[in-house]
Image (tube, rainbow, N blue to C red; front, side, top):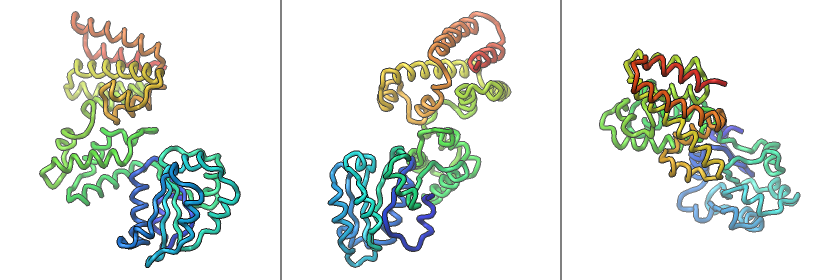
Length: 336
């Protein structure tokens, strides 16, 4: 079930599994249901939260047996479903209990990590059609999300600026770890800074966690993906716009160095936060390293880094055409 179906239902009851990458959408949907079915003054009676590691099956069953007080529904939310599965022996009696929940109960199991779809727990909700997926938004959906969020904060943003903002966040990249919550945090900073009615590129440039400007960023995306034609085309665009070749060269050197360091730390089983701290990078850039590191073997990166050092000496000591040298580097870097 797509989360949007929840908003289309006039009545709701039974057990649901909320899972997926988008924590913000999950939280918003829970808030929507809480506001729809319970009064604020009655929530101490009719809204119950459990942490999976701190509750038993008996706790949940007991919470679901008592009637709501002065509300039509009672909402019970169990956080960290994976822990709940691991800590409890879920036998047939548990699923019978879910099948026979009273109409006044909405029981929600929350899971923000990837859930194993082969487990009996997941299959139960899937068969019932009550597994609610909070997957990443499509490019069109996330553009609408950005636009509506700024509007709610009394700011306006044009489509060109939405595209520019999203291009710097890597949200639309396949397998990117950047979430809507990350986007929201960036937008909040932009809103706090911007003094005009419309958000412009300057507002975005000052506050978005980006590594290089958008055009060089596109070139680096092409290099990461080992898309030679795309990278060469972006290099030409930069050259036509009089972007200094020295600046582009420095960015390529930096990316190779970061990829090497990322792979070394990953092989040492360093955590994501440790890697970001040691490399002094933000989540957006970390996501790119994580997404594309598998495209390059360690040996290739080391050899290419040596090539970069040679090119650096050539560019500094000869009159070779910088564009030609950069093109040669891209061809070597995107060799498959």
